[in-house]
Amino acid sequence: MGWTRPVGHTVCTKDEAKEIIGALDRFWVSTCWCREEKGKCARSPMEVCLSFREDAPVNPADKRKISRNEALMQIEDARDRGLVSRTFARKDGDGQLDGICLCCDDCCDFFTGRTENIPAHGLFIEKTIEGCCSSCGMCERACRFEARQMDEGELVVIRHRCYGCGVCADTCATNCIEMVPRTPLPSSAPHNA
Image (cartoon, rainbow, N blue to C red):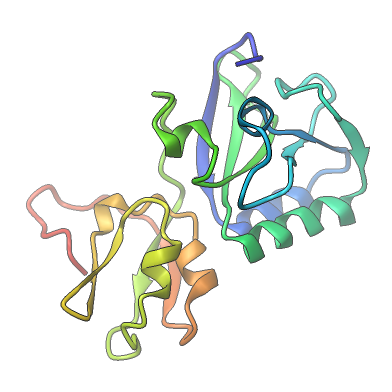
């Protein structure tokens, strides 16, 4: 891969990403390293790495400055495509975010198992409203972390696998999934909701 400094990723929801963008005033978009290496992605366009700093450790290929509105449109497009938002910052940096990657399971190194650079869990976790779920399976197909599984026609949620991306909530046809603040799960607690 092309960056030279270690970068840490943390999963975030699309609403968190929009809040971050709303608080900043400079944005760039560039081609994703994974997509450039693999070629055309089946799930999204090539330009999906947002950066907030001119010196952010991103792929310089096709890097261009964009407006806040264009950055917000990137997030909405990622929501429509079921992409996972991951903030990133240099591990040896000043603590400021460098940007947001919009990742998928087609070519992203994390999802394809070509890297051990596992992102941190986000600040939120799913909460499925009991009695509301129709067990249609749409959220299972959308979940990139295998936290939602169908078992004999019924949805089973494996909460410790939830990274807090919110893709399931974005996909739910009955609006019975909400993202709530993450609290540590007791080690002896069952993992099904």
